[in-house]
Length: 165
Image 1 (cartoon, rainbow, N blue to C red):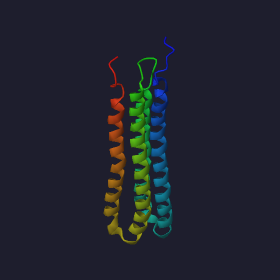
Image 2 (cartoon, helix red, strand yellow):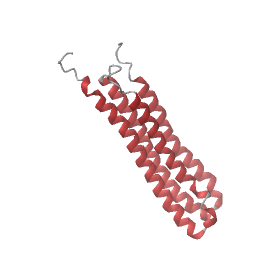
Image 3 (cartoon, rainbow, N blue to C red):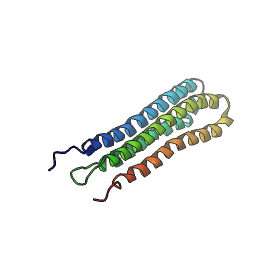
């Protein structure tokens, strides 16, 4: 075994950092969205308790964001096995960018879902015709995280294509 340092010895660090970033940032978005929209549900439930179950939609949509991060983190972590196959810096950077794409998209989607969910369920309690509009806005916010998941999957699939082994 060669004692020459090629730089690729640090590559798994970047890969694992990508897996952690995907999970942490997505879960931060999910937590923020759940907390912010949950406050709106609790506030609205005091005046209109019959609408509480209908108003749980933003909380559920925020919770899904954490699952997106978990999916990418599992994909990345299963792709890091330097003993079985060479793992180069290109692979580590591909996994890092994959995790950041999914995680930061999940964080921003969670913030949007939380803000829209909070205001939307309160407004829905006063004017029931706003429910469909609120759901559409929440779907578009969730789509942002889905874009991050798709890009994360594409980027993580690029790992392993840097050199012919």
